[in-house]
Amino acid sequence: MRLKEFTPREGWQSKVEDTGLPFHTVDGEVYWSEGRVYELSPGEVDRIRHASDELHAMCLDLVSDVVETEALMRRFGIPEVHWNMIAESWRTERDRGIAGRFDLALGGGGVPKMLEYNAETPGMGVESSVTQSDWLAEQIDLGVLPGDAGQFNTLQEALRDRLAAIYPAGSDVHFTCASFEEDYAYTELLGRLLFENGSTPHFTLMDEIRIDQDGHFTDGNQRIIRDLVKFYAWDFMFFEAFCEAIPASGCRMVEPAWKSILSSKALLPLLWERHRGHPNILKSAFLDEDVDFDGLHFFKPLFSGNGEGIEARKNGRVLAREEQGVILEGAAAGILQDATDVPVFEGSRTPPGALSPARSAVIGSWMVEDACVGMMVAENDGLIGGEERSFSPHFILDR
Image (cartoon, rainbow, N blue to C red):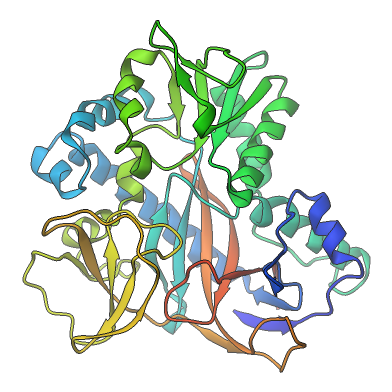
């Protein structure tokens, strides 16, 4: 993987907005970074794809045991009242998931290392699919890149096919998220793809959903919600009163409840325990286990998004900490995970308001149903990837 410095396209802001990505610049800082672009070889992409497929299969094997084992379910910190709903969703909706995204470090030796699995609310869907492919097409049209330049990106097509398989033409499907711009952008993409498939999407914010006298969920216009595609984490829903009404509501949830197991950081030590020494899995342990982490390692809350609550630790000292997110009480309220080499790329000095010269690069590999269908590159200038990350497009050349 190589960092390439490009000249951003003329009028790039409006072009990016046209793809459905309005937040290309956040608080004056570049989020969509056309000046820092990554070139990968076909071999690197093959390793990312194969590792993602294998990791996903191992994760599903683990879910099948977790939903049937009380001791394992307890490790995830999910209120017991919801265990039956999770297990039933696995038995009846095993194939109803849409997408997830692994975060991988392509460090020493080019071997992908799994940092975590954003299996339920995978952000950066628009920039990974439409915005990234639009950038590549124009670079080829302009002659900046050769005509045989490729990109590992069939995400939009895979999402369209997956939605069509779940919801036949003519379906009425509700979409929901919280009032965050990034969440809405991904939800809007899914709704547009469903519309192109011949179905009718209805959008409603999470805080507009109500329960009627018959126990059905309704939207802001009092329409009954039969199918709900939600970009809202089960992590939060499990601790909200209306969650107990889901089984009797007659509403099918996508992503289904079993996906919460994949998105929990409890997944990491359980995978390590089963596949100790696997080249794509990092040493991990629960806090109540007697496991030594002598060098750089990380504390991660069971429920954490955008780096919330994560700490970088070494020799008993906290080197960095992200703002705290949702952390459960008890011995298993978090996990420890070994650090790995995350490549850092030095660029030239950039203009004011642009990105810092030295930034680490993490691969996001996209899974739709059970196949890896694309990737993206997220940059960060600290030990912990959080809200300050930026996104860089990539291209592939065989040379």
